Length: 155
Image 1: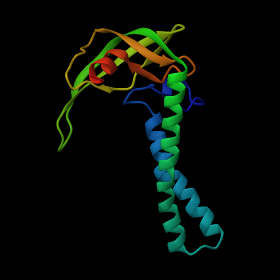
Image 2: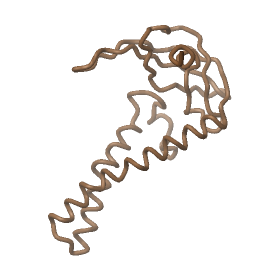
Image 3: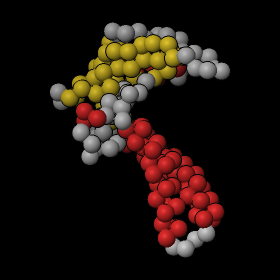
């Protein structure tokens, strides 16, 4: 999470927040550009510097996997339950793949409102307004899951 940004700039768990775009921009444009400039300043040939800069994008994959693993460990260690409400439920139309039903829930912790990320609900078991059980990390409340979806799809 980019905690140094004001909360108004981020829509945690949502599709419209600035955070995913910042991470995308940093990963695929800004960091390779900075690396390219540094390599050029170190007298590395233009083609080699360009290759290293483009190749650096692939170095992010292990870090993403490590962060995901750490998030799962934290989630399991600090898992807590709360009640939430499905606030969005809609079909996402995808090109060249079948459409999918997505839901998002809101939940309050200590007076602060949080949202889950969009969750796939292939069987459409949840609709807008449904009350659900939210599993979240008490350490990082943004790490959350919808218990009803877990129970339904882990048959």
